[in-house]
Length: 216
Image (cartoon, rainbow, N blue to C red; front, side):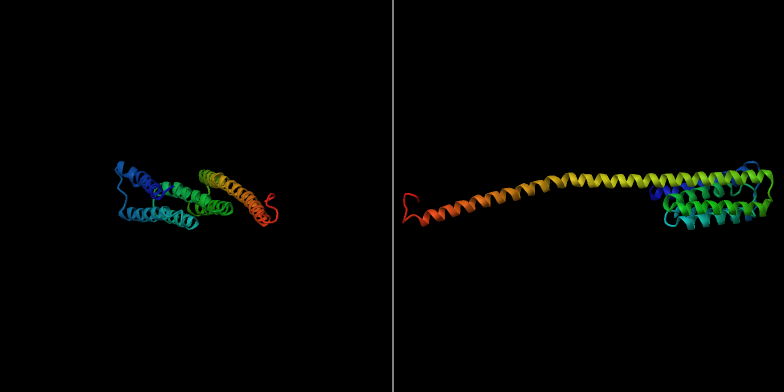
């Protein structure tokens, strides 16, 4: 992906979050407080900026996005950070899986799942619905991590295939030149041998010119 894609996805996520909150309450006629709007704007700005730079520092981006969404979810109403807290964290985790090694990606999944569990217990307790939400979130993170690792493996295989193709193409152009140089060396050696024989024969003929003119 290019840099435009890196900036586009975070902006789209922020727009989707704005549609969910405060968009839906505004449509229903409920005006959110100014403090809530300011807090949501600050969190959205931090998350968008972090996700735009996610390929340079994947793990740091994941930590920043998860921490910002968690801090914003505390004072804000339910749903105010739903899109960024789920899709934004998933996007950051996907980048970790595609850019870093598999151990780091799996470690991030485990840490996120444990942190989500502790955060859910501290904020809402552990009801049946909250437990189901945590399980679904953990499954989402695991699926995103698996998809990222698969993409990373596919990229590595494609790069290896491209390198093999480049080497084969280079060999295809190099081998005829090597064969041509070998033939040139053989022709040079044969020609030099024959010329040496001609020179030797001519020298012998000159030496016999006075003593054995008929043989010369």
